[in-house]
Image (cartoon, rainbow over all chains, first blue to last red; front, side):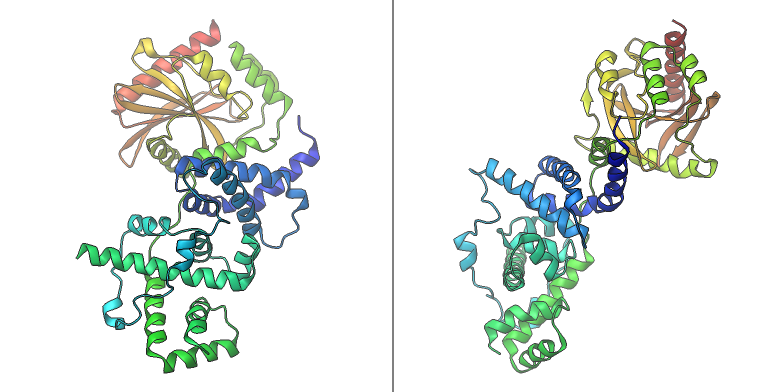
Length: 182
Length: 253
């Protein structure tokens, strides 16, 4: 039978961390692009989080959980090394993608058609790391720039440039697909 | 401000991350630069479309249950004796002796719980969510639940009676992990959800319908049962009768 301290800690942990389960799972789905790998990663994330809960000092639970999840995902990337590159490995090609390609067109022609969630998720999934990660943390998990910086352990300036590039790449891919479907 | 700078900072402007001074600078640049103005408008448009779309995922209930189950649980010795009582088929006496304190479902919660049970049934039908332990052998499924839940659900093989046991699963109803025993009737799935209750009295089975599913609910031996399926009400009633008969035989045997 677990000691009372453990039960009390588990209860605090439950109240603090479980409300973010969907957030953590969402990030895992985008980072790993696989439902069952994402489940495993999230479970491992919560196990580690509970283990280190004593050292958690706040203030924000969400970035803390995300940072743990990120470590778990990096281990998963290493396991899949032959297929994917880790978040830290910045693909050269992506770095060299021009940040803006279509800016000469007039705003009228640039209106994007609303798409179903599945199609947009696919476009996001196709973004290269580490841009996708920053994009998802901002646009889907609603973290502030400072929280993203804390999560990924990079300066706010890096967050800003990655986000700008991620959005430029997403928009270019989106428009290319619309062009294609015309 | 150069266009290179503006094309990064305009995102911070979109995200309300700039202080007033920098926001004014970026706005001033955009006002005088058609290229950056177009980029800003396009990005604002994309952000609007993204905000209108649900791009989040929902964690499967089975994942929630697994995480819940991995946390240290409050366990009372009396409950464990109930659990063993089940395993040995002497549940009635064990329950009478223990004065179990457990899940008390308030009457006004019944409707909400019914809808949660039906949702759990629906989720279970999605690919890969039906079964955590796959086995047609009750002696494999039953021990699998031990230690994962406050109370292990009774697992009874009804294959001979026309309802095939296919496995078990942890699910999540009313904010707690509970056991689901999964049966099949032809190609139709029957989920039998089992939770503990302090009410040891027998409550007769009652069928309700929600979202096109039949749910037959009853209470016996200190447990609440919900059998959910898309099979007809009469077949579901047959399932419950066979299950209860087999339970009774187990307890008395």
